[in-house]
Length: 407
Image (cartoon, rainbow, N blue to C red):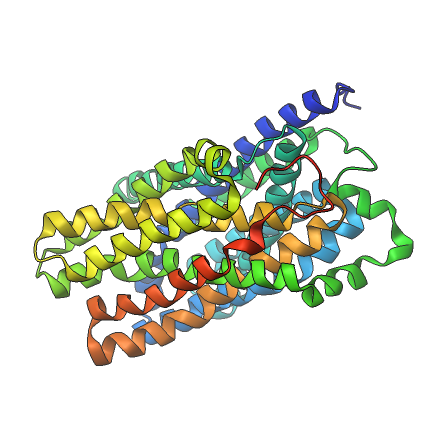
């Protein structure tokens, strides 16, 4: 048994430290896995189309996890959901490693599906725990947790690069990484202090007569939560498009090298990470609604710069502005969805499902547009989503039933 301080703020601070570490480790695990994807594609001799379909399996698994995770968290609580997610993450990565060793596409598909599901079952409870503990401390600091995930991703990518240069096979890399990362996530989840029965997501697990599945479905009928979900969808469009298309857009539009295109994406990611670290300061001064408006305008200006800049230097400046502007809409949306702790599991899961849907639906649409008008002009369609975030900004205003939060 663990002894935990009874002071709610001390409990919240402890929770924040633990969940920050979990976000970083989760970033390491995800990036170290994704960084070996090219080797996986080569090992199975997949075409681009076949590989794209295989990646879709991960996204579908993640979407299923996000749609169901609200009911799961409400049923068994944040900690047990994180245990489940950590175990499934180890299973998914382990199956992927075994598939590479045995050259079994069936096992690989199963591993990818399980890993996608696991990602959601780790991600959602961490976001809920971070959001609710932040509100206990009167802090809007969820963006910093997402920044730590980005830092972990950089470390995981570096580890994968070292592994590849050392001649370690992708199979050995994945199998060797699976258990340690999952164990750390589970062990850290075990250290999260027990929740207050009246002010936490885990409290929903003790209200069985309400029916967690019914509560999860109710979120899909709430106008405010739906608007937050659409805002999340639009924010995910911006970030996802940059990750998938920014490098190629500059390579084809400004005739730069592959290395320069990759550097532009690194600049975008670094700017977005910096913006997330600065999130609490920005939100504390502007409030959530104005933060969405201001950062949306900054992202829009940066996007226009990337599309129209006549020189690489100006395009890089646009990438910086776009990254800074894209940093906060997602964290702010999730934080808004978690305003009411007892309904946070269903609402955060629903908002996250919209983000996952954007990742699934948009790649083929963007790809088709890029084939017709080119990758760089295609990025202009993201402006529609950015303009939509401005119109949806009022949806993140504090829930009137949650006192003490500033808008």
